[in-house]
Image (cartoon, rainbow, N blue to C red; front, side, top):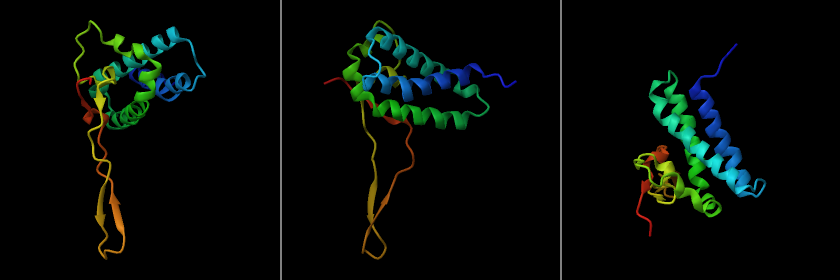
Amino acid sequence: MNKKTGFQIELDNYAYGVRTLIPGYLTGKMQDTEAFKDELGAILWARDYLEKHLPDQSNAEEARRQIDELDRLLLLSKDALLQKAPFYTFFRQGKDIPRTRWWYYLDLVTRAVVEAYTLPAADMSARTVLLPERITAGHFIIGERA
């Protein structure tokens, strides 16, 4: 029998939270605010666990890729999430959470990456768009709230 590790369980929990629960609340399919608070707390806890235990994984590169994809989905939903969950900052209040744990600071995260570079084609007849190397979600900047 293939038993899941704690890491895989939390990766599954994070994926379910980002791909299913958050969209469910954002689209109105789920509406219980107290349950939403609990679910967001569980999502943040799962992300903490993943960050802490990623270096110990034998498949760390693949796990990092999966986490990066989920982080990007979380970042894409941040504006709608913050509108639906104005209580989001509650999760860091009274706690000394470093800003490297950016998932607690979605209200302060700003986009600071180049989306694409545009260069003329060799024959100057068309334009070629070169996407930059994938930048992990950790390269987003946490600014001060305006």
